[in-house]
Amino acid sequence: MMEMWHAGLGWPTASALLAVSFASSFITIAFGIGGGAVMLAVLATLLPAPAIVPVHGLVQLGSNAGRAAIMTRYMRFDLLGPFALGALIGIVLGGSVVVQLGFRSASASSSCGPSSPNRPRF
Image 1 (tube, rainbow, N blue to C red):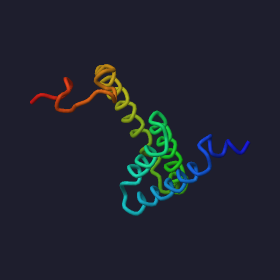
Image 2: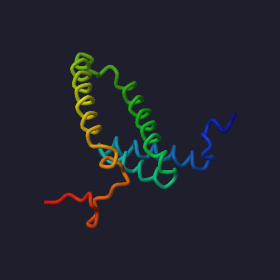
Image 3: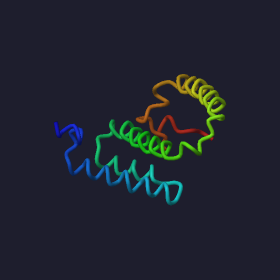
């Protein structure tokens, strides 16, 4: 039952992630930028590569949901419709571009180094 609390990471790793999540949120609050990059760097050292982006997404979701709950009375709900419409248009357009790129071009394993065949030519 107690393993559910640290999701199999172990208490030291889970505690470190909680502390870094708090510290990176504070960095974002204080400076307006940079907390997410700090969180990604720490996640990259503590977690396996396939888990980094999903865990970071969940951390961001929790952080943003907490901020939204605190700031609800200041939200402009009249802008929600136009924002959602623009977001849907962006999803459709961006998704169609990514699909057209193909797997090889969009994969993280492709390189753009000096000897790479994928390197842009100017």
